[in-house]
Image (cartoon, rainbow, N blue to C red; front, top):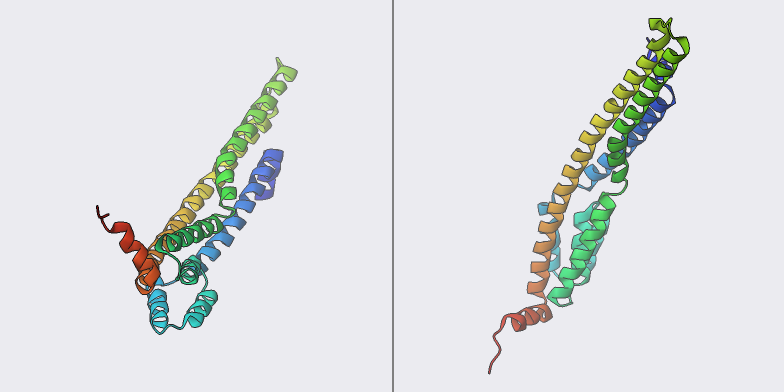
Length: 220
């Protein structure tokens, strides 16, 4: 039986399942390419930014952050923009920018997760419909029931079940692979953000004074 014949035998439920799989594949490819472009060698990038900031060339540092793709550059940019604020404000700005970047990285990821969850259910629906078709055929043809009379319903039940699993398993693996890539980027953001906050805090007298006042014991 040809692939087109299998799809026709599976019926509408199998077509819907395959369509969901195609949509999930498109989202996976788009997210994978986006996350791959976002990953940079953040240590080298941050060292370059720190060297520029030591020369007090803020405009050049911001320009490099704008030209560099990925969430790490945008988190570092947020720290530079708030370099003259207090330490708590700098940390808040970096944290808020990190949340925005995480949300951007997780965009459309729910599509892959949803397909991984509903594909087996669609396969189960096709199985139930196929078995109902078999029972109706047996009821209609009884007592002279031939194997050929019920083979169509049984074949539809098995094909839709297999189709649901064939879509769900790769989608589940793809979803977890994307999560691993996002977790690595989040770790890069956290490390770069922490080092940048430490640098601008050390270079900012206002931030250092605020930190000193916060830890200094009160005099009676």
